[in-house]
Length: 274
Image (cartoon, rainbow, N blue to C red):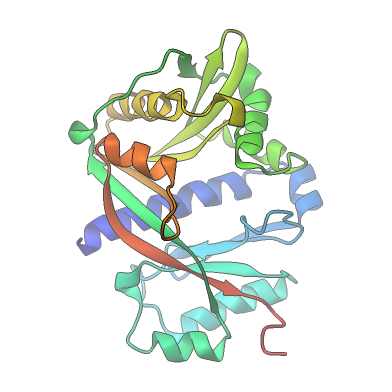
């Protein structure tokens, strides 16, 4: 692992998350209480009425300026100012200072889940197959695509679906779906940023899992990334608990993506010190 790879992996994730939330329509921003900002080279995203505890997060830090107590103060001041009920801070392990334990203790940050970051040169990708139809999603199918992605993740659609639909219009976004006949059963997004392509938002309806949908979506997005001039593919997924399996992680590794590092989620709550 080197700093350039880490900066690429963290930076593109920050950009697609920022694109999703900053591009949400006014109705969704108001309903969900979305506010976004850029701080110290990273992004801080607040969704005050987030029903999933997923979307309020700060990431992409440690490259334009170091992670310091002052930087963490600025990040958390943003969330306090927005009245956020909580947030997840995400830092690549290589950018954390030697004083990190003191910083997180002062702010009562507690450990959450862990994320595996993966990458590979685009020429090293090995495509998978499925008996289902896979292809790009047009504007007319964007609402159904958003619904399928959210239902596959077990997330509610209200407000968040409208945010994902708006994200389809971003010039870096390339959404794909899988169909069984006329029924859309899986979806995912490719986000192109410079010479990198982020493979994100992949999910499948429960009754269609284990039929190769995600492997086919990885292949379709890798092909689109190559056509867009990308040299690298980047992805992230949850690290499974000991004794458990994450099929998404296995699919990515099988396709040629390599684990780059594991990143700890740090959970902040405004009342943690109480």
